[in-house]
Amino acid sequence: MSTPHRFDRRRFLAGSAATAAAIAALGRGLDAGAAPATPDPAQPVSTGRLLVVFLRGGMDGLSAVVPLLDGAAYRSARPTIAVPEQDALDLDGRFALHPGLAPLRELHQAGELAVVHAVGNGTDSRSHFSAQAEVELGGVATGQGWLTRLLAATGSPVDAAVRAIALSGLTPLSLLACDASVSTPRLAGFGLGGSGGLLAGDRSAAALAALYADDGPTGGRALDAVAQLAPVTGAAAPTAVAAGGGPNGGATLAEQLADAAALFRADVGIEVVTVDAGGWDLHNDLGAAGQGPMRSLLDELGTALHGFWTAVQDHTGAPVSVVVLSEFGRRVTENGSGGVDHGSANALLVLGRGLKTGGSVVADWPGLAADQLDDGDLRATVDYRSVLAELSGPGRFGAADPAALFPGFTPTPIGLV
Image (cartoon, rainbow, N blue to C red; front, side, top):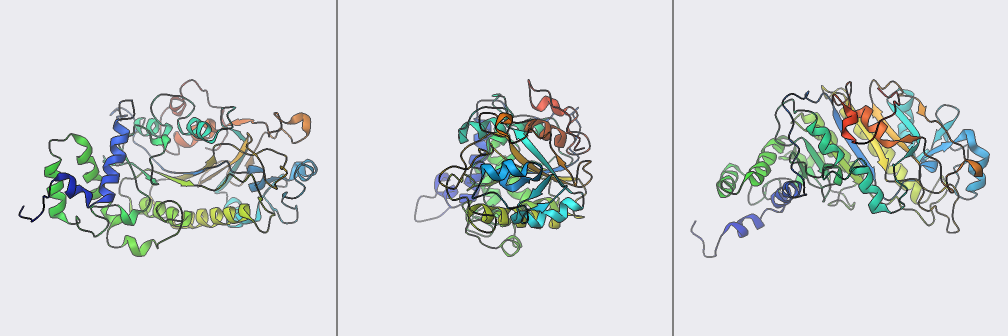
């Protein structure tokens, strides 16, 4: 090329932050210390779509899903932050939603939302980093995330180059060593130089393909990803998803879930989407039911989930499942700062049509009396892996043996599917 400046490969790729991010994300999967999971042709193809929303920081499940059946102990333990019974949105006479989750109540009444309470993370750790790693790796240090193993246990129905998208600036550990995933905070910015930047266009794509022809598969897969997602990230994407002010590339949770809905609706071969939502570590000033940080977070979560669910209904040919989880719950008793410290068992939300337990609360409730707690925490009676296994198996995502996704663990039937 004729140019007054040196225009080598490094300078050429520097003009496309989104492409570099895609290549880096794929490269991290290859260099994570384990061979990438390759689907076995004998394995069944996936039959569903899965959205995983990770509430990072430790969501307080006793605020989100209020235990009416243990109301006296609940209010005694939380004299300033307990959700008043008259404000809680009754689900089944035993449990109620925080008023911030009001948009989800109609989904519960329609049988499309199931709540699982007293869910444990399989570890005693109260460290955010350790507990998040435990959950995302599925409780085993195999060098692969649990979603990587799920995709390896199933084949792509359309032989897609990219099967999973992390709507985040970083690849989550749940997709560790997955060579069929990419990460991007926003769909509108994923492409060659963004949706319509310097490197956009067929000629630029061809030039990049030629540059990476001898560099192994990573660059080629990144270019394949750009082409595969073009129907979603092209000219229509910036108008479909407005600019936001959240921590993930400027995206709010509602905008991220709008992107997730667009991916599933477009039917471009994306089967798994992960979304991170931060801010849940409320040691101080959690707030009352009508105001404060918890109310704001739950307002955002309820509105975003309802918007996503409305957008995907009747627009995908495969069943869509959503799981909303956190690394751990909070202590039963509020602290002196009007918040709650790191705890253990938590509430977990599942969205899906055709759930056998849709419209119910699944809970082997252990109780909140002092002698029923686990060192001051809600005692876990359900392991999160049992929930994930049911959403991964026949009737939902399609893995033939979902128990194999969690080596060394035997799932307990929950009855979701």
